[in-house]
Length: 153
Length: 94
Image 1 (cartoon, each protein chain N blue to C red):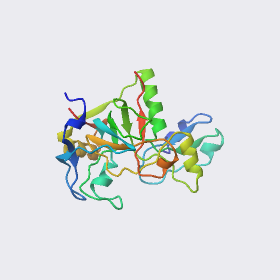
Image 2: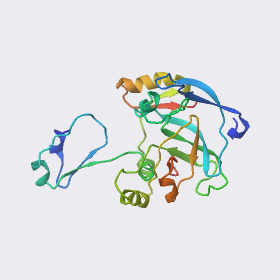
Image 3: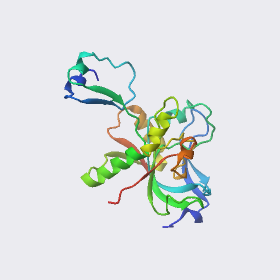
Image 4: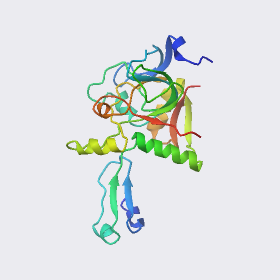
């Protein structure tokens, strides 16, 4: 078994080619890790009713083809140069949007204190997910996914 | 949901985590005497998930899933949409 996705040019993914389209198994180019992102080798992904919104094109501004997947569990395969909070080989989870919607900065501040992160999942790739580095106020306003650390067990 | 509100203890909190259609009917009396409350919660916050994972690891709680290989994602999706899935439908990369 290869330890890193680096050596592989393509990855298998489930793709939707148009709004209302079928879930198709395809080969996609392995995404290169960017400076502030980590790349995840996906081990499992939950199938959520929210996936329907992406599949049927109910979110505004969706572009196709796209890869669904909002409940990712996997292993960090590569980290970007600017990433200090995560290491290669760490187990990681990626979930859905996380910040309470409210007026003003109070909701955001409160969420930040609790360590919550905001994101709108632009394209959760399966089995490879790119994930923006978390932590800090910058992320709260970006379209970066959130991540969870796995406990040692 | 309105029925189970009567099961709340003193200071009991009713957590709404499922986006069911339709209004939730409650009567003021159900809340006043026992200082009970209703609160919504959106799942998926990193800190919540980390807490849940930690609790699972400590207590030995494990998820129950209906697993499908990635290639059968369309079938897995239909299963989830059918409303008949007993557990979380999960794609695996095996």
